Image (cartoon, rainbow, N blue to C red):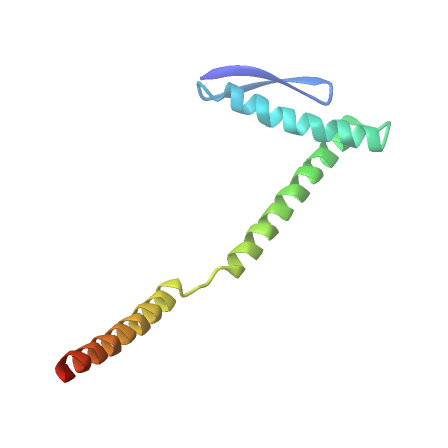
Amino acid sequence: MAETELQIAGRHYPIRCRDGEEMHLAQLAAMIEQKARRAQQATPGLTEVRTLLFAALFLADELNDLRRETAGRQAQLPLDGDEDDARAIEALADRIEKLRERLADGVADA
């Protein structure tokens, strides 16, 4: 088990994590630190707890927006793509069969 220290909103937090996850945790802490600074700049004099609360709210808001965006994109995708594809293939097969018949009629007439 590895140990690392994260700095968020001016405080140091010793954290244990699985070996090799230190860099990932540092990246997450940097995201939280960025949001904490934003909270402190927007509302000077926040307590540490409120700073972290607002940082968490900012991150949750971004996550919520991303989820909504993803859901919107998924809603635009055709649900029955396989069924639509099958219909398109059947229509093409019908056209090919009609062309084959016309060609066969043309050859028989010649």
